[in-house]
Image 1 (cartoon, rainbow, N blue to C red):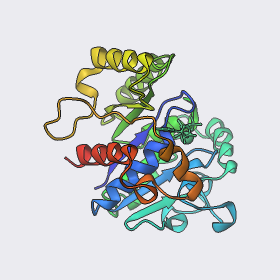
Image 2 (tube, rainbow, N blue to C red):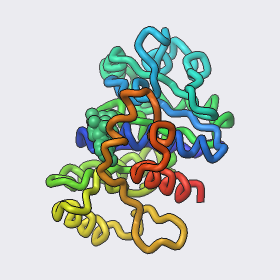
Image 3 (cartoon, protein in one colour):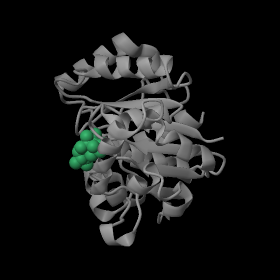
Image 4 (cartoon, protein in one colour):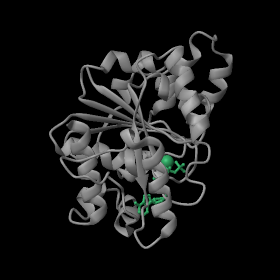
Length: 260
Ligand code: ATP
Ligand code: MG
């Protein structure tokens, strides 16, 4: 069975896609077979792996509405062991579908589809949109755990209570196995006092839910790193764009911590 991790935070621009893509690529480099599901109509994960709209005909909308199977839309990425279920702006139509689907099934539009291919991958990473709407609810309902990137800036923890209560609600109802995989501080800048403050707050409230690599005492933080921001425009994960940069080291550590 694959381990299914949803990367979620309804706050925009906190590093969800960056984390989903680079974690997926780093896991793939550890000889794990990985499927990255782009469940955001913005399609940033799809673009980050170098795919353009004309490169593929079908996307997650077709899977969610049942007209294609996941296996039929999966693309082989240029990274060995890494596969992509692409998105497209048309995926917003899922929101409409959600409201006309019966109450019992509307949170499960994704889970049933993943179940069929669950044995084929070691990890399935889901990138979700910046909202706690139908798409994210479906992503969380299909996942074993949620990884929450927290941008080390002012307002970082705003909205977190709402996300955590949604996770709890889903855990009590349709997805009892759902866990918090961990909080990942992103865009950390050591010169910035605000960054330190956010990290202190996180350590104070969620000490056990930060990621650690090996015996290192400090938790894993993703530094603010220009190379990370540049790599999507080359259609490459950071490990293929600049292996030795600090940003890549942090994502490699995260993958190691997750593989255990
Ligand atoms: P959205 O909510 O719109 O889906 P997101 O949470 O997926 O956004 P990203 O797209 O991953 O966030 O990141 C937002 C922006 O910040 C992007 O331009 C990305 O390249 C940049 N970025 C992400 N992580 C870093 C980092 N560690 N260092 C520098 N820039 C980063
Ligand atoms: Mg995104």
